[in-house]
Length: 270
Length: 270
Image (cartoon, rainbow over all chains, first blue to last red; front, side, top):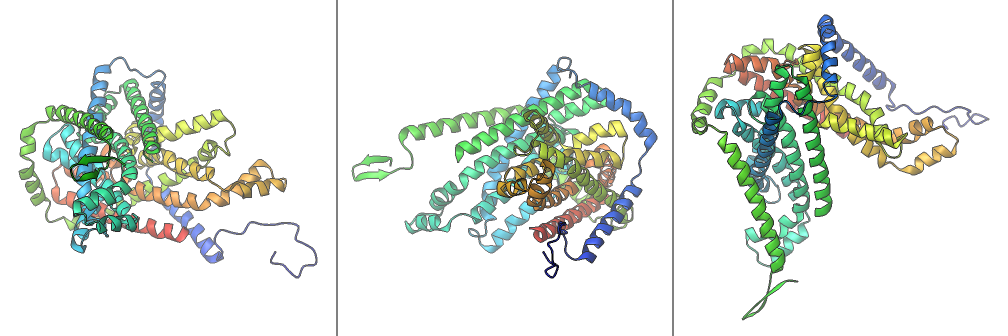
């Protein structure tokens, strides 16, 4: 197309490069190549250990066919139950705490210092992964599901309050003004103007967070926070791969069920 | 519109009596379930430790201050490892996620059965947390960066493939038809009709996942899969609290920087 002076049409066509500036393009490619080479070069891989481990990996894969649900059924069932209850109450507690924090972190509702204070709480609880929170919760509250509950609740605040605040900031102002014009008190204003606008999305998100909390509850157990993670860790430590496979399959099944439930609920709410 | 009759005429209400009763009943069931879950969790809690938590927190807090700055000398290498785990893991995930996404999208999948398999890969990769992937891989490949990188990669496949296949399903079909009309083969249609449309999403998803992976790779060391988590675990186990606070500060800084980078890159792409 660029070659206008040519007497005949060009017979071949090449795709335009993604980045127009050739120096920048080759610079990025070269930089990426150097980074990859250094990163791979500094990775210390113990190949003899890998060779030693591969049969173990085979044994682990073989354990999935069939997984052993029978031998440790009681323990697995207890762990799953504990995880589910832990995920449930930490979601509920996290959401209850998120509501005031989310309201305070919405720019159009709160005065500036309240806004900054609540945003700081959200940023703080979002920075550290649930597992690190769980390590400290275990140190403070002792082993068991209570520590997991605390860690997951704090994680829920960072997630839920942030999305709630963003949703409130994006709401339509007209409805809020209309309700305010009727002389509604602050609580009535929140209840009749803001809550109905954010509710559908928030219900979907709470089921999604329940799903995340269940998945995370499988992990906080590894550091002593109770739930199925503790059972899974024990199964690995005792080289009971067939039980570990069974636990993993149960986790996958529950997560799939929760995902299905949350998409169904979201459709129903909207 | 539901009304309630009073001496002074009808008064507006939000719900009919029947509707109100249903809502109330749902709340009752919900609260009962949560109370039951709370009961189960509290049974497994040693309340003495919980009462003691405030004092413990003050104690640990005092021990963590001031952070041991000189420990930084030993942290540069683990940070480099952590960043490599996240970056290489993301690269691995993207390389595998692309074919999986094309197999999972309704408009590009070769067969319904292939689609089902691809969806299963996505779900199972997503439901198992990276820490659990790491736990398994450490058994196979031995402790170290390799296990961590593969764990991050395996965990991210599902995430990247899911977002990517949703983008592929939402493309503008007209462009593909136009390419098809020129007599292009199926592969050429994908390359020239679909790929340019999903490329921005692809890059956005990659950067977004990289940001998440930085956060996740900080904790993989807890199960021995390399990165700064190894130092964190070691410091906590030896009760070196000033080192712990230093590591937490470093993690905080890494997360903030990675979030900033990813926001900048995403802004530049979209």
